[in-house]
Image (cartoon, rainbow, N blue to C red):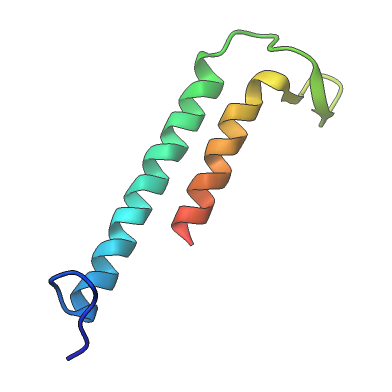
Amino acid sequence: MLLTPGRYPLEVSRPTQRRRRRLQALTLAAVAIGLVIVEPFPKGAVLVSLTPTHGVDVGDLPAVALLLVAACLAI
């Protein structure tokens, strides 16, 4: 049986780590969505204009960063 540096066998350790990382990713995504909802409009200079009335503002950058970290954790 292969052992990890911890106390548990490899077969037990990997699914537990995946589950923990996915839970962390879900939490970060929820926080990012909350940041977008709570922030007042307008949030600053528009960085990327998606349509004439919608785009990515400077105030959205923390939420975008959290979503990127969440995506990396979920993989």
